[in-house]
Image (cartoon, rainbow, N blue to C red):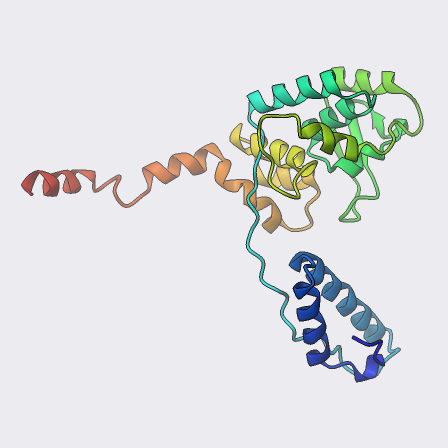
Length: 247
């Protein structure tokens, strides 16, 4: 934007900048994040009476982004993943981090940054989360024992890239940008498929808005059953059959 004076920034200035960034190949979600951060700066300055003019970006809508495909791993995929990790990966942390993510639905970074004092009484307490809110998720006694046997203090080193590389040896495909996040999607999807409550899932995942969690609601058994029971042909099926027979 040419480093303009903030008070002279116009909506058109930012729109031109945004168009250039997307033309340069920057992901629209990243551009939307930039807009959000800049809006927050102006709003905070205004709230603290450090500026006397309105936020120039307040009326600019963010770029509309299509929902990404939310893939998840089936049981056979999970079995294959652990076989590949155990047979090809020499990093001592990757398998256990993967287990934690699949058991709790946490983000890779949340598991990777765990310290031993956060595991207690068959619960993992996640702090410094994306939403800024702490949360605790129950785990099995077996997983707790395995984590405690792994070490004390900072449990893991940065292992995300190792997981990404190892994932390439698996026969199943993972959508672009969902390498480690596929584990979180897998937890949430299986939670709903097995009859979990959507509000409980929201708390487990730490979503600040239920709208994010609702992406998994369609996997609930009652939702799938209702699709066959409540569709417009279910109760009127005899009518359809009569019409077909008459024709």
